[in-house]
Amino acid sequence: MGENIIKIYEKSFRENAELPALSDYGANNTLTYFEFARQIALMHEVYRNLGIKQGDKIALIGKNTSRWVTVMISAMTYGATIVPILQEFNPLDVQHIVNHSEAVILFSTKAIWDTIDFDALHNIRAVVSVETGEVFAQKEGENVAEVMANRDELFSKAYPDGFTTADIRYADVADDDVVILNYTSGTTGYSKGVMITCGNITGNAEYGIASKLHYRGTTTVSFLPLAHAYGCAFDLLVPLAVGTHITLLGRIPSPKILIKAMQEIKPHLIVSVPLILEKVYRKQIVPMISKTMLRWALNIPYVDTKIYEQIRKKLVDAFGGEFEELIVGGAPLNPEVEDFLVKIKFPFTVGYGMTECAPLISHTPWREFVPHSSGRVLPGLMECKILSDDPENIPGEICVKGKNVMKGYFKNEEATDKVLYDDGWLHTGDMGTLNPDGTLFIRGRCKTMLLGANGQNIYPEEIEAKLNNMVYVNESLVVERNGKFVALVYPDYEVMDKLGTTRDQLPDVMEQIRKEVNKIVAPYEQISKIEIQPCEFEKTPKRSIKRFLYK
Image (tube, one colour):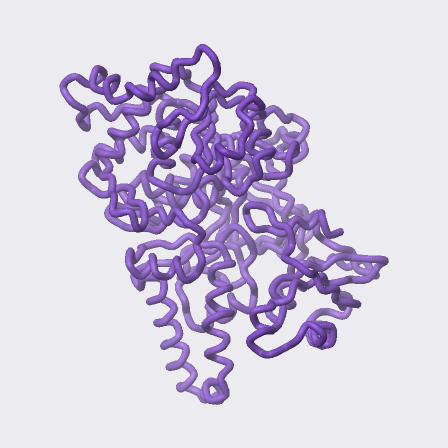
């Protein structure tokens, strides 16, 4: 497009000045693009008076709110590097990330600040409330509290004739400059800071704008964590580039809360993780289609079509009724759920990406989507190759190259060299196949792949998907022990209570499930045993199971 994301924002905020930009759900407050730009300009004056330089790191932690967004975008458009931290990280993880990133200012909510040891933050000059601007603490000799207290006066002096759209001018940031430092893990001491450049963000924005994922005057509901690359790119960074109205949910997106918000706001695009769709399918659709009369009716030609049309309408209406498509990403979508959505012609598509690509690698509009694929590799932006003798049929590691690929891991050349080679190819750690037209199919992670007795490559995620479809199974994990496959299962206690199943009956129920699953997996994928887990599996903030704890 000839301009990078910072200049795109400069133009967008001017041209869309009168349009609504940000709203906090349930708070009855909306910032227009002009008001948003004014808040950004005020923060720029704060940074200038604090002596913040381009390239300095500003850390940010808290729930998704318009003020959180203002801090993030003001840092980026100033030329600083924003370090967004998932609020689910424990205090030691937060401390490690803040110190490792070399951040000089930390914006935080009060609840999170109360868990942090200020003396353990080495480079931080002050900790500031992301919501109110109150300075929670500052190092001796610092003037942060004074600047924050006088920020309105400083702003008035900077714009004596008033702030206008002509004053919306942002820093010159090179494509290779790091604008976001995104930490991928919450394991203390081992988290890697992904250096996302201005060019990486621009690549994602170029695709989002060209494919009209968002466009001027549309609406969206932001409910994924904005500190994570997936939600950040397509619930925030792309919408702001075109003049979309973003409503920030600001709370845990349970299906009940989320569907209520969707029906009120009626978004034009929905960016989701599989968990949301899978919960709606399990809790609402499966009980409906399992009723005897409906099961009988679904076997009658023409009648089944009409029933599926009604289910589709109910599901579309539940998500607001006006969206063009629902994009699923962040984790694999359960095949049974996917097959049902395809059957009812629900407008969804599956994309693939990773933080190291800011995040998008592949996507296809839903009308062109190939079931069980992850869309096509982004044309003109990304290249893909499969490390396999037969990339179309035999899975191999997925490698990608192009505009979206990160600069590397911050202060970690060793980790960078393991995944990003001198020729520009990024080794994703995922296994898959690739069709000649660029359509990508993901099979699983390299490091989770198991080896069968006769040398077959086995992807535990595929067995787990079948297990998770079974009644009584909440979640599962397949591991290898002494050459045999064991399934660790956390039961669905809610279903047990509803069906009157006791804890004493659970071992027999699980044995029956093991036999049922073994009927539908390959002979070399047979499960020898199911072990019942007493509590949920430990997960990362992205809600992925920490597999390494259960080997």
